[in-house]
Length: 257
Image (cartoon, rainbow, N blue to C red):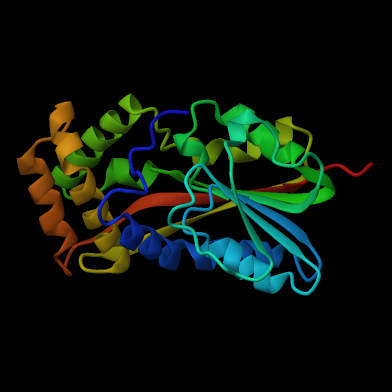
């Protein structure tokens, strides 16, 4: 797996992950509710980050349920949640527990993984027959046509830098085909794109992310201080409205025995 560019031990990462949870958990939890996961279910979240979704799941599947949250680094994960088991693991190493879970989900994980296809194979293998598999990943298509031109130039260079880091910011559109190729049934997918302005939650998220990575971005030669400062100024301007990511949620069910 490529080095994760936003290491959990970096200054500000706890705050950035908390903001990401506030922005994306409603979509994630809504998709899980739509899949009908309830009390007594066994659930697995891979790449749990701070564990906010799995903490919510632990409450939803009580009583009698079991929520497992997995990450390479659990240092920022919510601890001491009844019914929640935290486990350090790498999804590329194999299924977490073959054929055991009623729901397997991962969000914003696969675009950082060197072999996303292999990771999805292991995710699906962790689910029992009839279980739901839910994947949520970004597609940066909106950023490629962002306005004004200097913002579009920023994203063009950001994407060039991210490709060099092994990050696939266009993986979202490929999720349904991945699940279909593995034989899942009832595969469906939808995408949500936030239209936001400077000073809003998403603008703050991107300011935090870019500031956290600024030294690495400049050192790479892909971006310079002028372009970064221009982008950060836009993120602070309430009159500027934009779109960046279409988050694709793809779900399917493992074939029954």
